[in-house]
Image (cartoon, rainbow, N blue to C red; front, top):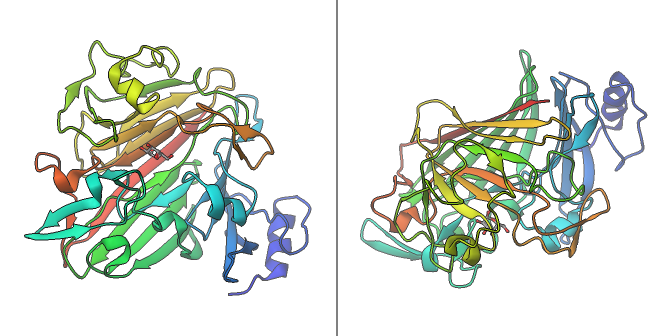
Length: 382
Ligand code: GLA
């Protein structure tokens, strides 16, 4: 569907903001229909659209490229909005250099050792893109694919359906995988992600969202003063390539203990061998609740200065907490400022990394006839 300029202007007028010409900023109104506008083009001419939606005071901008959340705005305790998600201003930057900013990740979130696994007696070699390992689905994962996006209003919810079909053998994975992700903004301003996938051959699946959070606003500096709570008594230590060793280690008495809540910075320089090899935190926490039928609260992130708070609930067994260790001041974000180490953090709900090679970890195998389902809910406060 081509951009309908009148719809854009109508949506903008409803939100009480000035409409700009095609390619400019399109705004949705609170609880109104998501608004689509052209964001840019890929080198081969494929159009990339940006969808704007808003509900319950939360404002979201989503790209058809990678299902990327380009911007997520929430108010502070004085009602002042900030974009709390790292991102870029152009398609070219996403293609050239994005470390997964705001993107959907698949087929397999995080690492698979040597990009190899065996399933039903058959071994598979995946695309290797992180040293000898496969990271976030390989060289061209779901974050670098153009998704079919459709906006919806359902009762008091507004949202987007994102569809992508990954063909048999893509990045080395077996089976054609049909993926549907639903981004919903509720009337309370919660952002819910529902992932669904079906396959025609046995395969492995582990989908997630790679948001880079800075609740003080992207480009505003370090997140070391953010307070983080994670409901996990164990985590999965890794080797130097960040592949789990298989051990479920206790967090108790280590810098990895976030059960009672503490600032990200408090123990980040403690010099624990696991932190030294990861350049900070870049680990999977084993959530105490385990796999649950419904999303349960697992983590809270709070910026004491602005009061902005993020609560995460999920049905998944793991949470990757990554403290933005590889940001090195070479990328310039959507707000025009460079991103340095620790300027954002990621909280990726997931199955454990390298599960296809770790028999003791919960299984990530999906078979024909089964439906992969995963849900994560983000609730915001101030
Ligand atoms: C994940 C990984 C990190 C890093 C980031 C992207 O969080 O665990 O090691 O690769 O993605 O830079």
